[in-house]
Length: 205
Image (cartoon, rainbow, N blue to C red; front, side, top):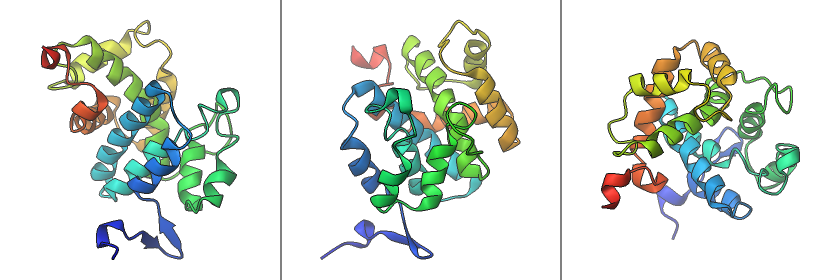
C-alpha cells in the first residue's frame, strides 16, 4: 500500500515534482561529489526561498536539486540536453522551464519570470559564495551572518568564478536586497549543514 507521503501531488493535469523523484532522476546521471553537493546547496536555498514566498517548500527544493541535470554529461552544452529528457520523464513543463531559466543570458534566452524561476537563477551562483565562505569558517555555516557574507561578496577575488553581476541582477528581478536574499539562503543551508558538509572544522574534532 502506498502512503500519502509517497503519492505524487497533482498540479492541474500534471504531476508535481517531488524531492524523491528529483533525486532519483539527478542521481542517475550525476556521480561527481562536488556536483552532488552543489545540487544540495541549491536545494536547501530554494527551500528557504519557497518559505519566504509562501510556496511549496519541497517542490522548490526538488527543482533546485534537479537544476544541473545534464551538466556532468554535457558541461560544454549545459541545458541543451535537459528539456526533452525531463519532459519524457514526466517532469511538469513549468518545472522544466524554471530549470532552463537559470541559464538565462549565458546559455539561452529563457527569461526567469516567476518567483521560483528568479530564485533559482539567483541562488545558483549565490550558494557558491556562501559555501566557500562556510568552508573557511571554523564553525562552517553555523551562525554565519549576512555581514560576513557581504564582505566576501565585495571581494571579487573570493570565489571568483561565481558571477556577482548575475546574482545582483537576480536580486533586482526578485525586488529584494542582496543582503536579505543571502540571509534567507544562509539560514536554509544552515538547516542542512550536516548533509552539505558545512558543520565546520570544529565539528570534525
